[in-house]
Image (cartoon, rainbow, N blue to C red; front, side):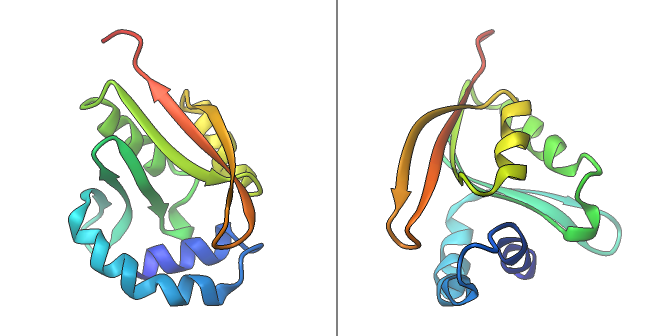
Length: 130
């Protein structure tokens, strides 16, 4: 949960921190309902990806481990098991948008997240070889 909270603070500096604090307990309760893939070393969790069916509920990597391929490895792992994946990402989170585009995701819808009044993209990846 600490990785989730810190990652949201850093990636979404345009969203009030209280929003993440207020949703902490909800996310903590929902997390066990998702299928979680974890990247770890001998001493700590480096990152994780959570899936609800084919929806990526979140991909989070510890700050000091970003840029080391952990997010790509986690994403590639779940791609092995699905012919399509979807996710939502805030438009202002340019680093994440670019990351997902490099991973083959395309914007299929634009909408407003009414909880924070921010534009977000619904993105989708399809394995054309399946």
